[in-house]
Image 1 (cartoon, rainbow, N blue to C red):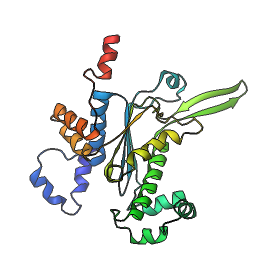
Image 2 (image 1 turned 120 degrees about the vertical axis):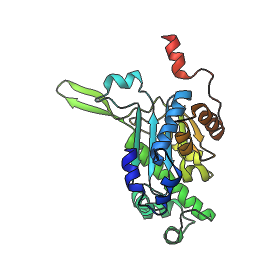
Image 3 (image 1 turned 60 degrees about the vertical axis):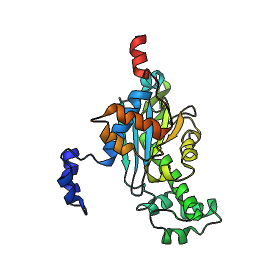
Length: 263
């Protein structure tokens, strides 16, 4: 997949000169963020990273399912899973998100804003407080919709013998960290509050979302993609920079090492 990416990205403006400066593989941003998410899993445990950008919203999870869900899971899911939602971007695909919310509903939720005027004038980076409020609401929708597309759910099946319970899709209930990266979540003031709505939105309890116990972190240096690339050659250095950006300290003994010792 990396080399297919390289074959096509060279046609983008300015990319023809990158090969003159780089002698290794070029990793696409979603792949690099996934590598960084894997690094965080290795050092700190089950994690999901949300990258909300102008064109897409990418969800990267590296986590194991609970024993309870594993017993009723219809199909096994990979420990590392990435979904790239090409219709959920807060600039290029702004209109798609507005349509998902509903223009009328959005205007009711933001009564002090002229939503249509903002949509006509908005240019990639919010400059006014009204634009920030508007983009925060779009970001919230992108986060919740993309999470619902990645996460699994509990379903009830009715048959001759009565009701049975099954699970399908990725179980994220064991996630310890919800991480926000990308321009929206790292630069808007309410990034953490937006991510906390993930657990709050699971009103029925049937979605296999992270719970309220998961710690919310922001990639404050907006560096996860770069660290994903760096981790391939300098893992410990990338881990230290990741600690700094997330504002945490990794445990001296990673969770997986504890499991091995316990076994």
